[in-house]
Image (cartoon, rainbow, N blue to C red; front, side, top):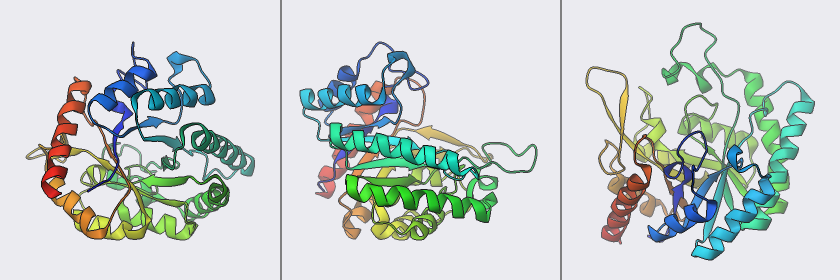
Length: 296
């Protein structure tokens, strides 16, 4: 298995997108020392750095070169993609394309995570973590129509840029589950727009596909992966976030299925819990590397 293994930036954050006293070069060095091939950064520079997105990308590119990383990804929110106001949609299209061009030019980025409008239940009092009452289940036809139109326009330009966007299967969005993400990319119907499967999010839904079914649903549109883990709390609908090797998702089975379907894309490991995240980065990298070695 020769997939590029990526460290999600939340292993290095102290709060709210901030790296604390760490520089971008520190982050890149640490990832390289642990054997990661690259880093998935957020699509906005941390506010405490006070720099533009281009300056942010240039510092990341320097860290990539200094420490021998091969893959840099970003996560781009396109939150106005279903706004009824066409001028708002045009503005977010322009902003997204500006950033993707910079990412491709400066960091040689080839694929990025993306997400759309957050969609909450219209019913008052529904808990935010009752995920099956939010997102795609309450999306209106207009949400599908406008999101599709926005990403079709973005996708045409991405073909020129040479960068792909992948919808993360994430609660609260129209693309919250593998099936709804697949529906969206099929509607968009552009080779540069696909899916970032995060089965660690999917397990929070009471009705969900199996791991194997989720991968099959994404199939040829699977551009990226997020790996994390959790376990159900007995007698509760809630779950406890765990290390990559300690939860209910069997990542040995997960990786074997990816080998079976011929997936060659990038894989991000993500830190789903607070605490000593740099230590979690070491533990999770060691676990994943050991499983890959066994399967190889």
